[in-house]
Length: 408
Image (cartoon, rainbow, N blue to C red):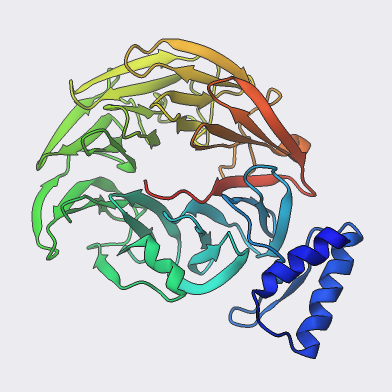
């Protein structure tokens, strides 16, 4: 109880409490001493329920979704700090600064202050909020239902108001993605709700300066060393670099690359690879390594299937794949050699519905965080040492997993 009172005192930050606030604070401490993880209150701005202001800000928080809300955890101990009630299927991505996470909700993108453990009033409304991309000190949101692209400086989120930024609206709504480059050019996908074909490039004044429509089914993006940006296609990848588009074809007529992971430390991108357009759910065992300098594509068989939440990059550019065998496969992107396998979770199988929970890999620095929904567990693993640092069991099974990450 003494430690809890000290934490409550820190949260006051020198301001005098009213009688009502003091009563609420004392009640929160008593609840915590009784073993509850957090209390909750109504978010009057949205009609939804959100957790009460926590006692102490946490460092490098993680955010995991569950059916009906969000868990916010301490990034080092994995201790559950706060639970936020948020109905619907929610997705989470780093906002690009040290405090915030973008939550994709039924009504649009909402900004969560994960450090202070509360939803902010910052919201980008629109149907079907999709990809969140961080690059060159900018964060870009793509709202599928409207085709709207919003670009902002994530460090401005600390002001508590929606940052001033750039907005572009696609010719037609579609499941798309966009990324702003260091020189201010905006790369954004082309398509409709029925068909996606490629990408265009806009200058700082939103004037079109380039386009390429040789990328059927365009999906997903990643950036490699020297700002080579890749967009996935059903027959390879489309690279935009130094003002030009280059297509790298797949070795198969249908060789779909829809999810990619990039690293500033490597010119090679990691992608998935699927070859059956008729499959209800293809469970591939091969991944793609796309060399953006040599403009070549290499396939590597990891010996196990994986899901779209299985790809990540290590601190030195290592290609990481969380397999259904339960291990993180560490691949040298330059050679394609599997350097080691790190035990992470029990064996699992990817569910048919993409919204259903499955083990998820999230990497920050030298630590890989892996969820294990079947056991309601979350693990922290040292990538270089290849060993588990700590684990935690949560009240409910989690689905998506992310956290704060400054920069891209």
